[in-house]
Length: 362
Image 1 (cartoon, rainbow, N blue to C red):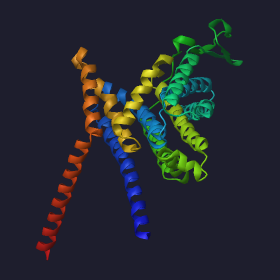
Image 2 (cartoon, rainbow, N blue to C red; image 1 turned 90 degrees about the vertical axis):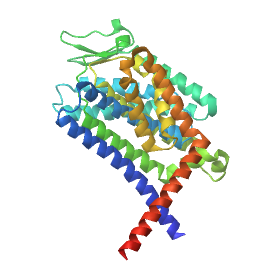
Image 3 (cartoon, one colour; image 1 turned 60 degrees about the horizontal axis):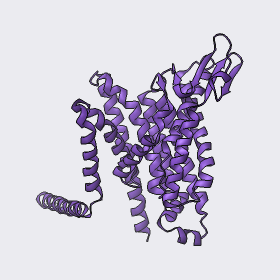
Image 4 (cartoon, one colour; image 1 turned 30 degrees about the horizontal axis):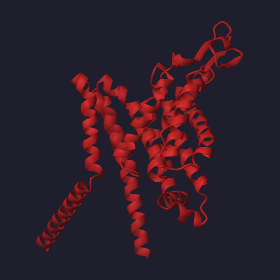
């Protein structure tokens, strides 16, 4: 029993170390390439969005893969964090001199507001199941997008001014509009950096992996595997599902704040249903509950349409074909069986080499 427990602990730690190590090595390699001017400007421009979408994929995996609930409105929480982060950053301009501190405060504020939205949505929604849950989260995601697209916020010497129409905001001379309704946010100061994105990924991995392997995480997975059995042993199903949902919402809000401050202008249409589906594709192709898989799939699938851009009209067709092939290879029982046979064969070959080496040494 003790040996099995130690083996499980080692397996968990090995998986976590592999995830952290992969992300860290990729960051260091890209930093070295950037310092040697070996990355083009367009490639460098993809780094922060990739970090944001890795956080989005990992956080959604907590809901879809670990909790077992289908959410189709995750981009809505990203939008909340994006615009709240822009407002906080613009409000603190001049009061806080450090750009890094302003970025951190905007990410924290965006994450907290997205968490509040997660609580408001999650309390009634997470009592639903299956298709009903997916439809309602889709609706709430679109509602959040449309609410954000109709907010006007301005800043002057007397503070912030809020309205739901352009004529409702009266600013003093020298005041600035931070949010302009359907036009979104313009004149955003670019505070985001690849280093900030890397640190946010590490923070997300720390939160998600520790939650998965905690008592709460085991309870969440028990609900996913057998809801009735979990209720019978005293697990409060809605409360634990809400924990996973709100944590994912907070992380999505922080990713949104990072994402928005990588551009000079952004609109609410960026966080629509299509974006939620793209993030869900990252999770499904990376593997349900597979955190490292979400990191890799978000990186590859975000870059793939850009890499195919030279093919013009055919690039989205090729992108769809790649998705279908990867899906078939990932979920096909025949492919999984062949991969298992290949792993067993490689294991036998490795053992033979080690035994031969030991015999020659003796």
